[in-house]
Length: 227
Image 1 (cartoon, rainbow, N blue to C red):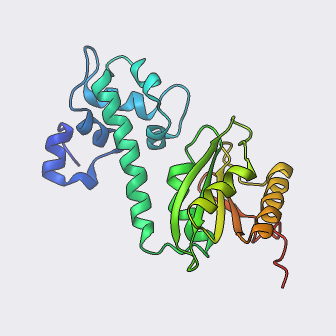
Image 2: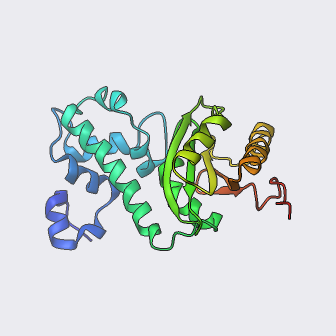
C-alpha cells in the first residue's frame, strides 16, 4: 500500500502510471486554493455536479466554465484547455501511422477524440488526391446541438480550389448516437449527385458518436457509382 504522499513525491517514487486521475491532474495544477489543496481542486474538475464521466470531463470544460470554479484563474484555465487539446493530438498522432482514407474504421479512429466531445455538430470536409491521400481538412460548419448547416456549393468550391478528386464528409452527433437522420441521408445523396456532375466523388459520409461511428457507404445509403 502507498503512504499518503503528495502527488509529486508519489510520482517520483512509484512512477506516473501509479497515480490516480486526480493525482495526475493535481500535479499539473501544482497549487490549490484557500480551503482546497490541488488534489481536492482536481476532483472538482473531474467530478463536477453536472456530470459523472470522470477524466473525460477535461474535454467538456470551457474557459468560461473553468473561470467560475473557485481556485481556477486564467493560468490554470489555460493549462487545462491545453491539456485537453494535447490529449486529442496525442490520440490522433498515434492513429496517423496507419491512416487509410479508403477505410472508415481508420478515419473514425483518427478523428474520434477531436469530435466525440463536441457539444455542437461540426462538419469536416476531407479533401483527397488521386491516391486517396489527404490534401487537407476543412471545417465547413458548426451547427446547433441538433443539426449542422451544410452548403454543397461551399463544399465543392473548397474541393475545386484545392484540386481534390474525391471527398469524405465527417460530422459528429453530440448525443453520442451516430445513427443517421433522414436529413443526414438526404444531404449526403444531394452532395453525391452534385459531385458526380463535376467529377468529384463522395467516397463516404462518416458520423461520429461516443466511441462509435457509422459509415453511410457501409450502411448502403450512398448510391452505387454508375459504370
